[in-house]
Amino acid sequence: DIQMTQSPSSLSASVGDRVTITCRASQAIINYLAWYQQKPGKVPKLLIYAASTLQSGVPSRFSGSGSGTDFTLTISSLQPEDVATYYCQKYNSAPWTFGQGTKVEIK
Amino acid sequence: EVQLVESGGGLVQPGGSLRLSCAASGFTVSSNYMIWVRQAPGKGLEWVSVIHNGGGTYYADSVKGRFTISRDNSNDTLYLQMNSLRAEDTAVYYCARGGITIFPPYIWGQGTMVTVSS
Picture 1: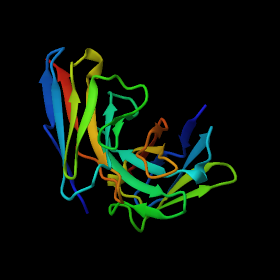
Picture 2: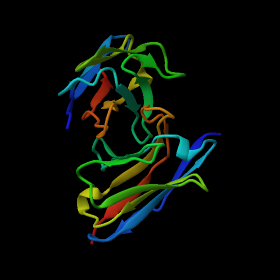
Picture 3: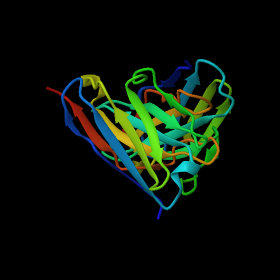
């Protein structure tokens, strides 16, 4: 099975900072990669699908890039409401594995 | 309004069984990929199972042979039959809607808690 590895596992940044989270697949998944945001006590929310397509209603400060095995989620200007754990997920074929998550905090 | 509402969670002893339900409104379950995802307390998201709109079913290795995903097309309800439950199955279980073609989960239920303990 393909493994999904996110880095870092946690980060702390200041409001307004540019934040980058990476996700690496152990085998190529073309662009079948999604990013989710989960705030404490809340249901996960889809942010990006097909590696770089913003889900409707998601702020434009979020962006995704990559294909094959290496993917990136970028928050261009971190806001207090972005405090959350972020997950990547492959969905090209079963199992639809999630990454282990990246916890984002405000410094 | 498009909505998913899970039910059926609770406390069960190791080795026991439980059936989770996920009632959909605002769309047709059989036309979509439908997914179960779980999250153990304080842990990350774990994909559990998917049923394709064509009927194909797939499972995580951790639940294969013990869990069964199914749907009732007449009442737009998704199910997860869980047998031979273990302590490590303790988690919040979410059902989610994918797309008509392959698409990641984008509509999620609120989750139902399953606790496996003696």
